[in-house]
Amino acid sequence: MDRIKRCGIVPVIKLNDAAKAAPLAGALLEGGVDVIEITFRTAAAAAAIESAAREFPEMLVGAGTVLTAGQLETARDAGARFIVSPGFDADIVKAGLDMGLIMLPGCVTPTEVMAALKLGVNTLKFFPAENFGGAAAVRALCAPFGNVTFVPTGGISEKNAADYWKMDKVIAVGGSWMAPESLINEGGWAEITRRTREAVELMRSVRGSV
Image (cartoon, rainbow, N blue to C red; front, side, top):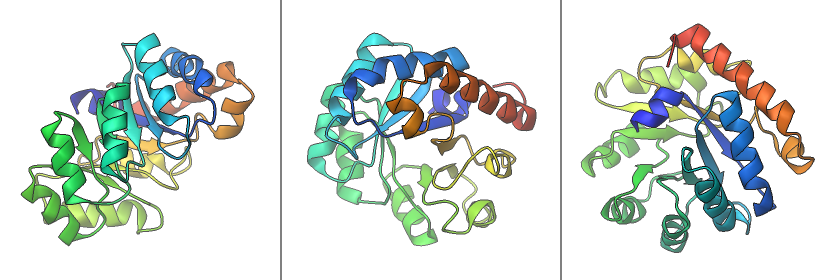
């Protein structure tokens, strides 16, 4: 979790071709981001996670959109070191913790936050962030839960990321604006590096050095 906080940005990536995972990871690293979340939205996810983790061990590779115990095990076996889910499932969280994985379950209500805290998880995904009230909603949730931090994701771009980075309780922001699916598909690695650098510069202008 310290690595995610230091990076401050979690690129949320959907890959249709596992062969693009390694060059994408290289482009992100060159741009100054050493964390990546590869989502289980395609059949290529496990192979993509394995490729990125193998080719770039300095990259912290995680699995996103983990919805089932089977996906959790597959992600672990592929080399994922943190697990992100869009919602809160106590059984999946427990299983991941038992495997020694970092769990980032999605929580957008006080009840879900309290359920996560009951399992000892106090850094949570807030998703879909913009649909559930944006930065103002995250700020409101932080008030009664002083020991909780968030990684907001969903509808966040270079236009509104600063609203989240301004909050001490937001350790990182998730998004795909620096590496959209269209650029990945066409192999636009140089442009992805450029956008990643811009995102890092924006974050540092708000948060300071990471």
